[in-house]
Amino acid sequence: MKTPLYPINTLSKCIILMVLALTVQLTFSQDKPINDVTKPLHLMQPDYPTLYDAPTAESVKATIQRIYTFLDEATPAKLMDRRTKEVWSNPETLNRHAVFAEGLFRLTSYEWGVTYAGMLHAAKATGNKNYTDYTKERLSLIAHLANYYKQDNATDEAKDSPVHSVIHPGALDDAGAICAAMIKLNRMGMGDQLRPYIDNFIDYISAKQFRLSDGTLARNRPHPNTLWLDDLFMSVPALAQMGKLTGEKKYYDDAVKQVIQFSNRMFNKEKGLYMHGWCEDMEVHPQYHWARANGWAIMAIVELLDVLPETHSGYPAVLKQLKLHVAGLTAYQDQTGFWHQLIDRNDSYLETSATAIYTYAMARAINRGFIDKTAYSPAVLLAWNAVATKVNEKGQVEGTCVGTGMAFDPAFYYNRPIHIFAAHGYGPAILAGAEILELIKNNDFEINDASLQLKRK
Image (cartoon, rainbow, N blue to C red; front, side, top):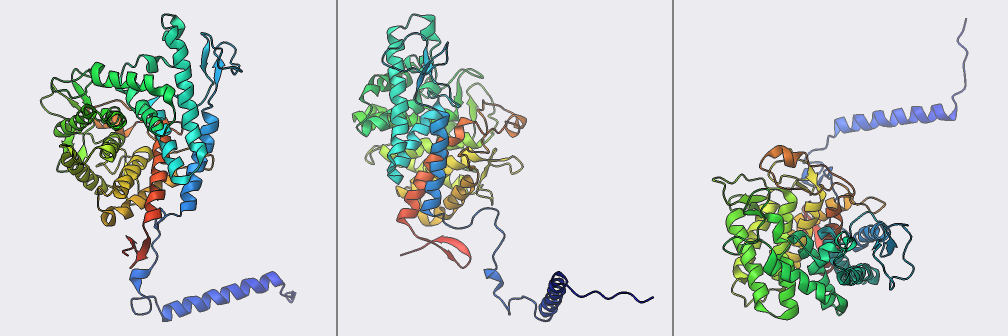
């Protein structure tokens, strides 16, 4: 019996043609392989895990806007009655049940002090007034609520109020970052009602926070006479801004002293990195180079240099310390553009908030002429491109380590959780984007011989 013949349909013809084309292509590639004669191999495009080019201003602005849109909804500038959860219709007539309207983040936290500063910086970089309004509205609301509870300070409600840390700061975490943001807004000619709280915060930092015998800001946890690297940021920017606001040298002096004395005890000159914690009574000092703490340190130093008069006797030492730290950090950057949770341990996870802080601090250092822009701009752009991949479509910042205490073993740092609502990632991402806009506005970049380079004019 003969096999029936069927006409070749269109799909069959396409398949046959594709097979023939592939056969011809394979034959041709075997006859003429790609080599350094047929094609310059050094110009082949690698499969980079992160965008390997300068970002566009439009893409950076879009990333900042997504974060703002999310945060504006997630942290409403409203008050409510803690019993009924109803939004206060007339915030001028408060009572003991007044609290902030429910949101995803705490408006008085140090993380949100960073966010307020980030919004002000983004407003300047983009011209978008909404970002300034975000900070102005919430800081004004904090002052308004604090004014009420300050008058009613003896009640249990006042002690449990959401502004207790504003009226009675009990740690540098309560004071420094929020204070610095308030001063920045005040220096812009806004927020006159904030001045009593600025003075209150500075008084806490300058006169009430525990210090070592040489004046170094310290804590008594987890052990007596302990230095937390985080505390450089929880103090120095506020002191520096107060120096700028008032012109009083004593604030600059204290800020410089903190940077130098922390660095003398905690900076590893061989690695160019800081340890996270230092305890006075330890015979040895275990070194865990936690990424975000190093971020707090470099950001504090950059923000100090930003306002510190060049004629100040401590200026050269602070500038030198910045350059040493930048060199150390860039040596450990991952090929993805991120830094690891423990900077010098590549098997620890890649972390977003620290990468964003480094991006901001290094970009600002370049923009202010503190460090070599030809040497460091490519690494900074790569870092921003990495951070941008962690800002999802909702404007949430992914990949951020949650709040972290101090430890003297590796397991603690390796296993700190990551969470999308870890507040530490938002302000740094906004700051980083704003400073990157300045960097790409004032400089040109190119792919030169396959590598990203600053374009020399």
